[in-house]
Amino acid sequence: MKVLIIEDDVRLADVIRRTLAEAGYATNVAHDVPGGIEAYEVDATYDLVVLDLMLPGPGLATDELGGMRVCRRIREIDTSVPVLMLTALDGMRTKVEGLDAGADDYLVKPFHLVELLARVRALLRRSPQAQAPVLSVSGVTLDASTRTAERAGRRIQLTAKEFAVLEYLMRNAGRIVSSTELIDHAWDSNYEGFSNVVQTYIRYLRQKLTAGGEPDVIETRRGSGYVIEQSATDQQSGPSE
Image 1 (cartoon, rainbow, N blue to C red):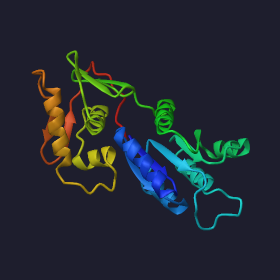
Image 2 (cartoon, rainbow, N blue to C red):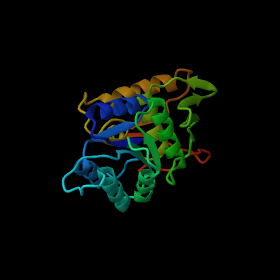
Image 3 (tube, rainbow, N blue to C red):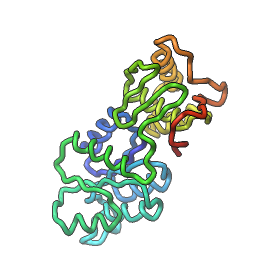
Image 4 (cartoon, rainbow, N blue to C red):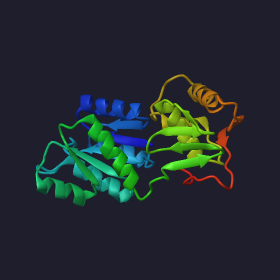
């Protein structure tokens, strides 16, 4: 799952980014109106947007709130992506204007990070494009709501990043997924770590998924990527674009 964070408070944006990353979300960050609009125009494949209401930006009218402008532009591009608006303004008029601009939910500053995560999960569940919460592919079951995995009755403990990689492969069962695509959806788009990070996490997943003596379900297609094949009895929601 990919989340775009648009927040001008650099420290708060980093706290939100780290919180979401630790929960298994890939994140990108922008800090003003032009940056937020550009981030979404360049890559409109985000599953959710966390948007600060009082964003700075050039050309704003005296009483215009930058977050409203960004929200309206996002809605011109995509009418269904969930938008969680952050604001220090708790007035009813402001909330109504934000909802009318296209926001799906409000979170008033200061807030607890556990509530932020709960709001994010709730919005993703309510999204018209919400994915099936429980996936079952090649004998592996993945519950996105509880972030747990099982195989042959055996509970498999996964790190947040392992879960993100496995979830994306299972949601795209039957299709070869490249390393670049996995990095784009499980890591930040600005990821600059070591080049074999995907290969490393695939190895971790294989070790855990086959710990009970089960056959390997992740196939390597050399020069192309990785695939988990699906059967007629598998339950999954279709490709995650």
